[in-house]
Length: 163
Image 1 (cartoon, rainbow, N blue to C red):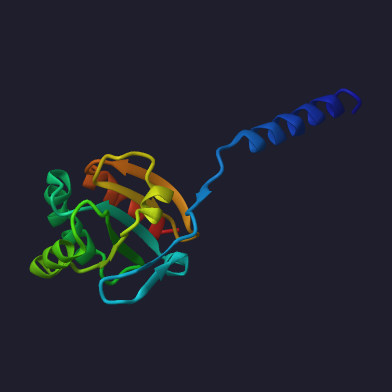
Image 2: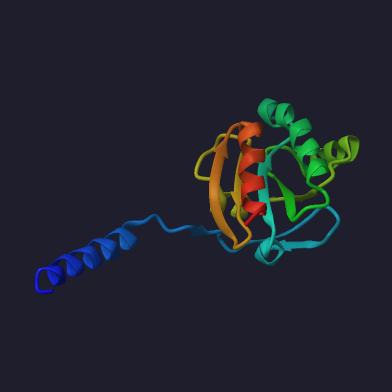
């Protein structure tokens, strides 16, 4: 019994160290925006939903290239606990963003971040598009700089929705 005690203590200490060193999920930063329909969007809208926040602007070639895939994704998950929120970065005017959204009939909410305060909270680069995947607990799972691999993104969203 005396020989087992030090082993048990060592296992507990190693377990505590491993638990302490495990990466902790980072909560999405507090934010508030008004979408193009004058409705508020905030952290409260993330509760209990897997969310992809997409930072983009209409004159961005990569943003325009990925937009049909985002539209399809929003449609594919429309009856599930998933949402896309578009945040237009103020490279283009709000009028240009509104025109782009209307012409393409984007099936998700879009806000215009006119002073980039929200963009700077989530995006650590000046490369766009950038998307942030958030789980149902409001924790950031992954940040995609550039267009994500949509096959892998769908798999990750499916995994989160199954939890």
